Amino acid sequence: MGSEFVLDTPAVRDFVAGVRATIAKAGSPEEACELLRPRFAGLLADPDWLPAEYQADAPDSGMGGGIGQWLLYHAEDGSLSLFSLVVPSGSQTPIHDHLAWGLVGLYRGTQDEEVYARRDGALELVRRQALSPGDFYVLIPPRDDIHRVRTTSAETSVSIHLLTNDTGCVWRHAYDAESGQARPFRSGYVNAPCDDDG
Image 1 (tube, rainbow, N blue to C red):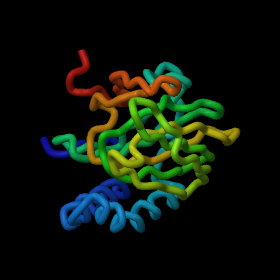
Image 2 (image 1 turned 90 degrees about the vertical axis):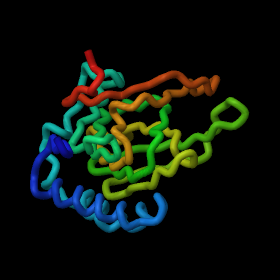
Image 3 (image 1 turned 180 degrees about the vertical axis):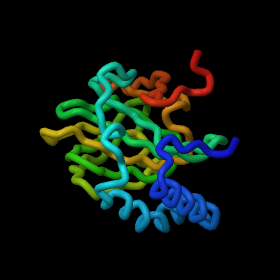
Image 4 (image 1 turned 135 degrees about the vertical axis):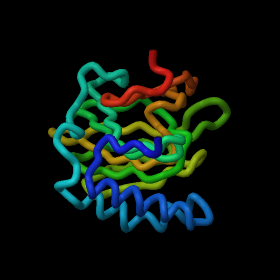
């Protein structure tokens, strides 16, 4: 069956082809992320490649707060996904992990990101950063993999995620901010089912 392009455009196909070629020649996740920086920055800087429907909030989504996770591409074997995460003004994600390495960048709006570490069963806030369009960061588990993002702009924020799993469909973890307790979490996609959905 091959790979699935939900947003099947020349820009997305070219981006994904370049990403896959870069990952194939990189010797480590860290090297791959470093090599992918210029290509990812170019995607974030292009105002025209992402249609409005993939920048819309999702009032009935499973993430709550109107947050929508829109699949753009995923590899059939689950080794790579590209998606937009739409967070309405004033909303925030749960504290969650990704269980994958990759890049996350802001396309529209502004956000605050809080990065956590698990220490002795509790969560410790280790970094907070403000993000503007074009800013992006690297995720390499277990370092930097647990975070929460909140939209700080009056407009909805849209971030672009390039991660090395099928993030919306894998079971990962959400965390209680006070106790640090983890619970199973699957975010899903607004526009695509997971293979084991009903």
